[in-house]
Structure formats: C-alpha cells, structure tokens
Length: 310
Image 1 (spheres, rainbow, N blue to C red):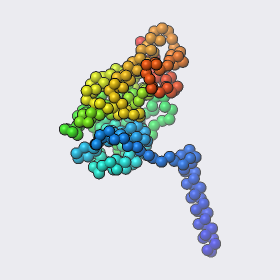
Image 2 (image 1 turned 30 degrees about the horizontal axis):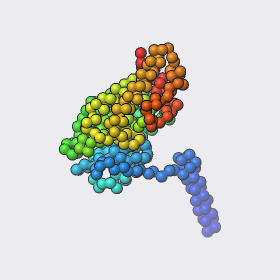
Image 3 (image 1 turned 180 degrees about the vertical axis):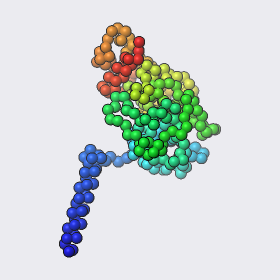
Image 4 (image 1 turned 180 degrees about the horizontal axis):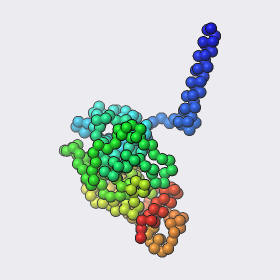
C-alpha cells in the first residue's frame, strides 16, 4: 500500500513538474521569464522617472498623494506599484495616461478602484476599443475588457485641464494629432518638468498610429505648438521611451518631422511613388544622434503621409 502511495505521489509530482515546465515554456518562449526590473531616475526630490516594462512612467509626489503618468505593459502594474512604495508611503491618487497604447496604460488595472484616471477625450475613446496599432502586427491586449472596465478614464479634457494647485499643480494640454489623436502633454510647473509620452518618444522616426488617429502631416505642427506653449514652463522633458531631453531637443524634433513631411510632399509632386521615397530616404545629416529607422515603420509612415499630402 505504502509503495503505491509513494509511486502515486511521484507520478503526480512528475506530472505537475511537466505541466509547469510546459506553461513556463509557453509563457516565456521556452526561456525563463526575464526579471521585472524597474529603474528609477530622480529628477527632483518629488519627481522621478521609472523605466522598464514599457513606456517611461513619471511619479510626482504631492502633499497628499502621488500622481503617476503612464503605467506600462500588461503585468507591470504591480512591479510599478511596488517601486513607487519604495519612494514614498503616500498613496497613488491619480493616473494620467498620455495616449492609448498598451505599454503606457495597461498597468492601470492593478491600481485601486478609487484612483482617478485622467486622459485626453480621444484617448479615452481609444482605450475603450484598444484597437490595432499601425505597423505593429501583434494585436493589443484589451486589459480593460478583461477587468470589467476598471482602469479606464474617469475624467477627460479636450484642449487643457488643470489638476491641483500650488506646488502640486499639474497642467494638461493637447496640441493636435501626431503619434495618435489624443497625445497629452503633462506639465509640472513647480519643478519645471514636462512628460511628453510617445509623441516625443526619443530622437527617432515616430510611430504614426493612423489606426488611433495619428498623423504624419500634422505631428510637426503639434510638436512645435507644444514647444511654443510650454518651453518657458519646463527645462526638462520626459520622453516616452528615451532619456530626459530639453525644449531645444523638442524644437529640433518638430523640425525633423516637418522635414520628413516636406520630403514626401515634394517627391509626390515630382511624380515619385511612395516606394521610391522609402528606398531613397535617409535621416538628414544635420540630425545627429537619431536612430536608424525601422524598415516597417519607415514604409508605413511614408505610405500614410503620401496619402495625406496633396
């Protein structure tokens, strides 16, 4: 009897081990999952950039709580919350999402039900749908549908909104289409810092998400409006995925996007096809330090800009 019991235990243990092994391989592509590491960059005594697990998150510690800008990929909400608790014992009271993409909004679902979620009105509509992203073949995970709508926007704004007052003041702005049709700019006037999200993700060719209202014909103007309106309020700009930059970098990025638009427009007027432009276009030499464009992104951007311009 004892022998049968022991044998049964061994078989069960072996089956469990095999099942766990299959699960881990399926979940991690036959590899052990990478550790969920979030790195902290301190910009001010009460303002931090948290990197890893998707887009950059901004953490602003206020008198009575914490405001978080963008909350990373699915599954990264809890690591983000844990890291915030290492920085302050104050509760998170507010989330601001700069745009709809899953690597900036999915962690919302891990925060408490009473946390206020604020977005631009077009982003609120996009988050309800969580539709496909232009030039990215993998469909997004609709974490909000999976969680009964928890984490969706509770308040929205059209062009501007002010949250809190005094040293806690936050100003929200929308300057037009670009990365999407709901890109929010988040200004912290007391510390002279601004969060830009992915309309200014770094010095690279932007992801123009036409499926979510983006525009290559308008992004340059939207970026320049942001520069004109906020350059006197902020010395530092938290980008969507890169390092902290300056208003001068933002102005240059606006010019970079305008130059691409003009290149496509002039080539179309000359009778060249979108494919011809893709094959010949290079980042102008004056834009030093810009990342080489991804082929798929360049193709999608040029084709869509080509359709937009006259």
